Length: 202
Image (cartoon, rainbow, N blue to C red; front, top):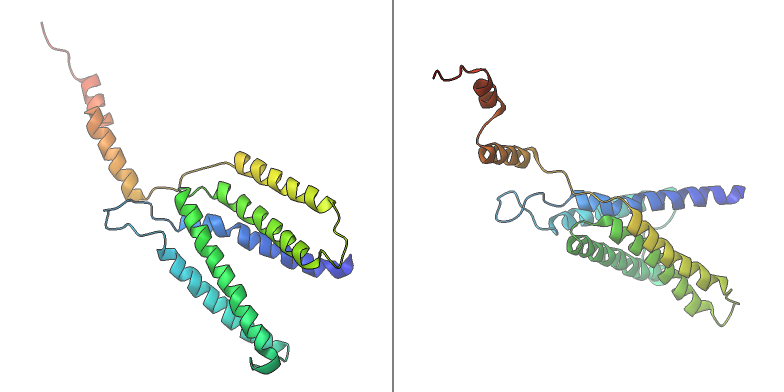
């Protein structure tokens, strides 16, 4: 168990970061609607998702390679690192794009989207491993039981996670307050004046 502590900590860190990916993306949505001049499309944050990938992956990768004494060559026997690394990165970026569209089409309902994403990712991983190893290892039927529990867990989490709309900007709240006052036809100050004014003489 001692040798597993570091991998478990890194896995938990991954779960924490990826688990907050959806909520962070939800906060990146515009709080106003077109044709408001401050409106932006849901794909505007996606550009900086790419920038973050670029900065962290390239800078972090180069630093880690240097620390590990790795070479910076991607030719010959090292071509697999280049080719499969690019494929993996493309899958990650495509997943981010799919997730962006899922959040958009669900109107920011990350409580629904995120359990499906991560429960589905575990299942896809298991199915792929099964397809690769089914002829060389014995697959326990408990695997399918676990996948059924994943589906059940996704449903339970998505159904019982609290939902909430993003906070409106101060300008929008102020405009709504003014509209409310206009609709009521009076303010607290006006009502106070009417309360203490002298009654009409008969």
